Length: 124
Image (cartoon, rainbow, N blue to C red; front, top):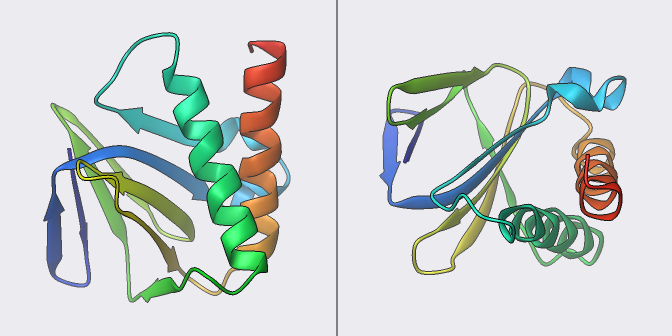
């Protein structure tokens, strides 16, 4: 899986969460991608969302601004994020966050954390 932004391409992404701005009103727009496809995958996404949310609150994560669009490619699937945040964990366990557009990062991180928490608890 790869992410492209600001004329950069990052390959070797293991897990990605795309949180478009409209997810603040409707969490169904949140998209998740992973190289895994088993019962623990939703727990990985929950951990990513929780880590991003708490690290942002504590000032421990820099959310890198992106000029333009974030593009995620996995196999034959391509998704574009025009306004929102992208959370990514690479194959070595590294973690980073991107924001595109003028968005409220804190609110989007809250939305994805709530979404993933419900997903794990309610198995939706």
